[in-house]
Image 1 (cartoon, chains in turn green, purple):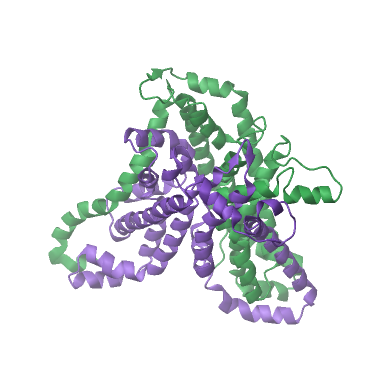
Image 2 (cartoon, rainbow over the protein chains, first blue to last red):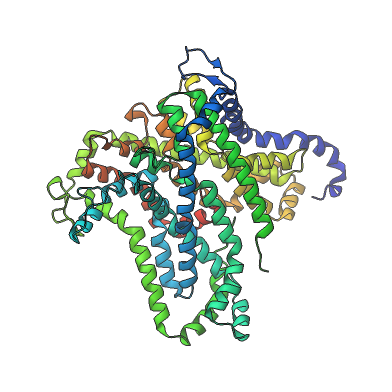
Length: 306
Length: 291
């Protein structure tokens, strides 16, 4: 900014500029402090107390006890393991398959691509609760279309949501259904943005179809792929929350409970603020470390053309 | 992460044309097949919701792809069971007010970051950006307690309050404003316009594309919001439609017909926006990444 050009007004502007930005920032910052930063601090404080959320009952200081108890709970470790399963299960649906589709369909004519684009984006704008309701209907053990089809070919109906071995994969698949079209669009856009002269140059050098994909397209797509992978790792288990809440309630036998659902369960089903807050703090710290490491990785390994 | 979709067609076309001519159509056909399958997979559940919502109770379990005796039976039953109109209005108020406020606070904050260098500006910006990564589940208990202390449980106002500012809006707008030519701002300042006027008469009108696509994004995400309303809801009258849908799914059994009707009604506004503004909706989602 060329401050020197306005030498006469400079003094006034500097004193003005001292508080002006803060005035403009105030509404946003106050909101974020009140609803995010202060609650974070409060969650840390509450994690050292035992309290059942009733205004009249006392908050009892218990030190590290909440943390010790949580780490001793099999439920906690089960939820942590499930969180890993969610992330690993979502990666193919949110990254690998969309990547394959994006590369495979990149030379379809512009017009039909636009139509496909419009259709595969629909799940993304549908409300998670609506998606949960519709899938619950489609997968109903007695009357759902899926099981009618399965029975139609003479097989036993599948208890998609009440079989402990199947339920988590059902929730993962529904989450994947929401995301797949979106990831495909992101990757298609990145793929289409690759400078065609690079592809032509590789072709001139005698590279075959697979070599072009492996040596030109994939490296150039790596930063987008990495971004989607990181988002899936950081947010994947969170995206499933509504489906778990509406479809399985974390069950059967905790089989679909992930760490986010466990937090909700501690906080609002069992009304134990201390446990809920302690696991929130654990989650936040774990999440923070993971996010830090992943963003460092993005910085180091992302590859840019141009 | 920003993905520039518009810049693509012009330079991709000549190569595409040449390639199609010297390759067998087989690959293209397989590509179409793949995309058609994916399209069916993505669209069918939504279609099935629509079809089921028009099936009266006695034909609900039919598997035909088209309702044989279409009726509005499920809709009347849904309207009788829960105050749907009221819930839709609540959802509209929640989404519209949140959108307006997020844009307002976002525009002001973004202007501060784009216009001035001030002590701790980078730190404050990082602080804003980091809130985007805080899972809501982590802060939900204190947020809930705060709302309870304010005596606002079970109100639409309580839904709106934490949503009047968001990191995403601030970051996207700051990015757009930083890209705005500084000379134009300086010229307006030379003409004696105050910063306030520069913001509202120069920057905002010129960034209306960005602001509009951000508005679409915020509106749709708020409309679809479930978790925060779930925490606060006590009565159907003061809740949003997403909670209404959930009321048709109970442990004792599901009222499939009305459930599909309520789900259709809840999706209708968003689907209408999508049909009318398809390009803008897709672009606004793609520009902002996922969440």
